[in-house]
Amino acid sequence: MMNSMSNVEFLKELMNRNFKVIETDVIDKYQVSFVLKQADILQALVTLRNAGWIQMSYLSAIDWPDESKIEMIYIFMNWERPVHVQIRSKIDRKDPVMPSIINIYPGAKYYERECHEFFGVKFPGNPDYEKQLILEMWDDIPPLRKDFDPQAYSDRKFTKREYKEDYLVLSDQNSKKEKREVRKERAESLKGGQKV
Amino acid sequence: MKQMKLFLGPQHPGMHGNASVHLYVDGDIIKKSFLLPGMLHRGFEKGMERHSWINNISLIPRVCVVEPDINEMAFVMGVEKLLGLEVPERAHWIRMIILELARLSIHLMAYGGLGGPTGNYTLMYHAHADRNSILDIFEQITGHRVYHQYIVAGGVRKDLPKGIEKDIHAFLDSLEARYEEYRDLGIENPSIVARITDTIMLPEAVVWELGVTGIGMRSAVGKAYDIRKVMPYARYDQVEFEVPTSTYSDARSRIDIKLKELVQSIGIIRQCLAKMPEGPVRVPMGRGQSMRWTVPKGYVYSPVESSRGEFGYYIVSNGGTNPWRVGVRGASYPQGLLGVEKYLPGTRLDDAALWIDTMGVCSPEIDR
Image 1: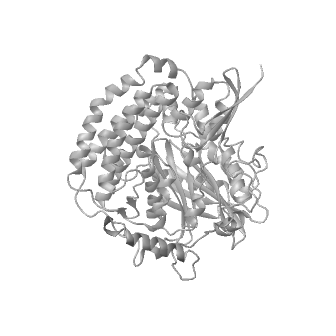
Image 2: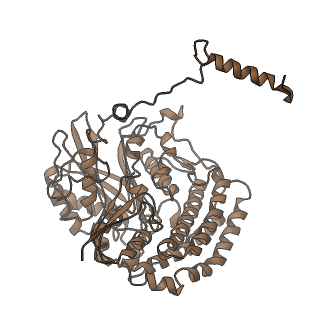
Image 3: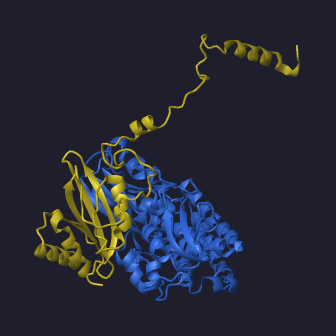
């Protein structure tokens, strides 16, 4: 295994030589992130895979409603040159479409399905991306988007639990007042273990 | 012959947690299979966005039910990376003790779980009895048995109680003494050996295709691809341990590696107890009221080596009091979903539970 800082330098050099990197961030000696344009993503992944980053660790998205963007995030790992590479790219939020990467990394198949379910990103090229995976019969906007409010959804979807009697407030208007008095009297009468 | 549809789980002795494998079988050969997750989806990733950084400590251990401590460690390491926080030296060693005890506990549970699909329940009772001793130790250290909420950003919640070293040593000695017995009960037991040898193969090409990590990968590739070794966190670079590997990955070799890792974990805990310095165990993560602590902007992925492979948290902060996005990379996601769909067909019906068991599929981390 080579010196890990040189691995990060190697990656920086590799990406800058081939693509127009918008932003580079070295998080520590085992992790580096690159922000690319959407059009470069597939080519960048092919380059990374050929350079030895053959394990896909993670695929997901981040919602940025203020910029009206969804940010795709891919993480890859190479065990011989141990660096996690983050590749990020912002795509349009109104109609998010990202070409599927299952021909480069077959393991992405279910990650893309999940990403479609939770962020509404479309993955043309993945035959199953529209199939239901985790959320059964979901009928709202994708739930991990920032404008989805779980509280409002829950209020709309499920009936509010109604309590027939308020046992905590002992007001005089309570219709159970008489019963309560009777119970109290009986309890008093049983004091000392003797019935009056 | 007509194909028949069967369900493995959610209630089945060989199934771990609340997921179901749908199987289409012809005789006892599986023709088509897929995992149906979603029965345990609790919306953690959304929930974490709605809670403050310190609140989330009580939420994250629930992501993987049987192995809570790695969740805490992965999340907390990510937060510390964003903050640039230096953790006191003693806290690193305490964290390693906790993590390795947790590894012992989950390996025992998984090894005992082998009793379900192979029909040897004695193994399960023995393993769970020993796991219970670990939970007793956890209870003394953290106050909780399963969800400890002990590792927090900046260190650990409190120092080890006095005299706990003695209890830990006593437990490690007893486990080491029973190690041969465990082997005899499980993977040296002829009735189980016949069941697990040469079944549920995992060739190296499949490892890279699916993205399997952890024991599954090491058993097929034969190299020490362990995050504790290749990109050490805490103080794993200062303890000596080996990473057991093999180049022939059947159910037996994976279980064998699991047992060998038990011995390594015992060694790591002993070294930690010997090398641990005195000193403070926690620095505060921020100043002022803890619910208003903020974390600087940034994107970070923080991986740890769980008992099932690379387990990571992807954390995005926009500088606020809550995380902007937390993504969980479940270690068993690839083999649990794509692995079941692609590589279970062609095997026998009774091997399906062995795949779930020996590949360490944990449904809570798929449905997070």
